[in-house]
Image 1 (cartoon, rainbow, N blue to C red):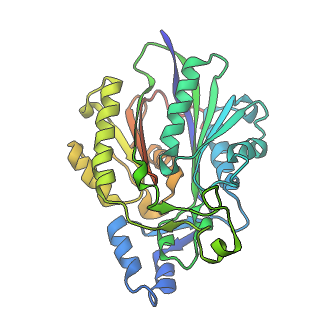
Image 2: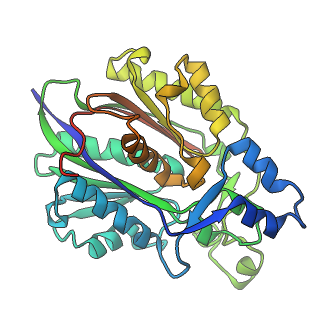
Image 3: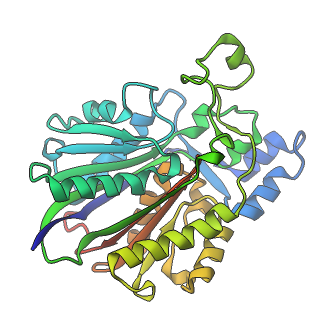
Length: 340
């Protein structure tokens, strides 16, 4: 018998304003002919949703957290710890998780942020599971992934094509039982030699924000150099194989694999590499765009709603973010959200 973490509720939030590819074509085609067409073909993205301009990241995270708690039959005051993953925080400091704690009314919860870009959510899940397994005082952890990158982008940069706002959240609770249920294993990869490829490079200690850096656009998110596709095409299969090996399960026994939702063709290629049918994955970028740190929990919630993820299944989640960071987790689910 042992203590382990199980997902007992999940929720997501999609902001109200839909931004279609046709709207972006009207904006960018004169200056960047066929850019939107090319990005649509290479990514599968057809639309994205943006939050109101007066919202902060914590405002997007809040309804997702509330939905997840409702699904788990929990109140905010039941939460012992909040872990929030994002690379579009409210502030450089304080942590966005503590702002969410206040807005949510989770008065008994400690908090911390995870900041490894779009690998943040599976990284946060692994951290939450480890804390639950080793700390008998922590019984309920709220894990949130949230993305509001469009607000940190230059509106005249065509790369806003990718940025969709959204949030997803899981409630993890402590369980007692034999090994093989709930959180099973995690695996990680990183290569910091890519840290200058894509990011926000002014506003931190490397270059504090100045009038010059603001005017030059260095306080906005920028693609400096494209990542080679091998980063994901080789890294994702490696992580799936590693996390299933550590979990003591066969790759063929995995029921669903969820990946960072940036390029649908990459997911199709990786599933082929793994020898798994496409029926064992799920994508949302077509309708919601690239939602970064939020895309894995959002894909999970949508997969549950559509019956792709079902009780007692083995689910692997793989996140990939700039820097680069990559992370994978494996869970054996139990019953799904009896309170919804």
